[in-house]
Length: 146
Image (cartoon, rainbow, N blue to C red; front, side, top):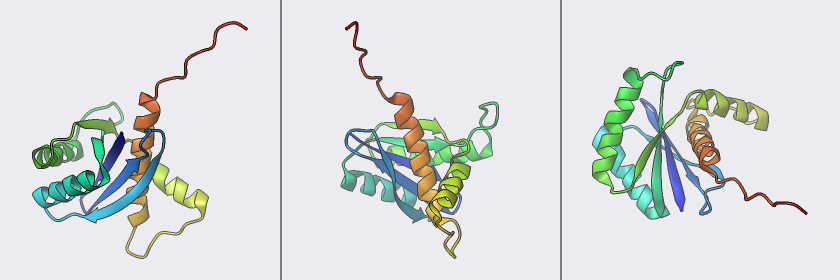
């Protein structure tokens, strides 16, 4: 089952998708923010076109795991997404995903685009998704005695 991850920002929405096996995340695209309803509808259309079975929304939490104004904004947007599509939706802590995305960009030698950190938004969504996939991966069965 493919999983779509969302890094919802004030100006842009970074999206990433998993492979069918749910092992690997990759950046997908970036959507410019328009309005809560339009953004939710655009994501719902994209999820349907990609054959997604689950949506993971990055939730910005504080150092102690507390919700703040940004996480409340993301939750309100996610409610609009729930209305726009019938896919199951899960929240996942996105702490440090933007910093990890910037570090990945530096390691791969890619420079920021003139318009800002467009690459980082989709890569941050991929970081969120890969963290989610790794945390939900079933460990391989152990082989007993030989």
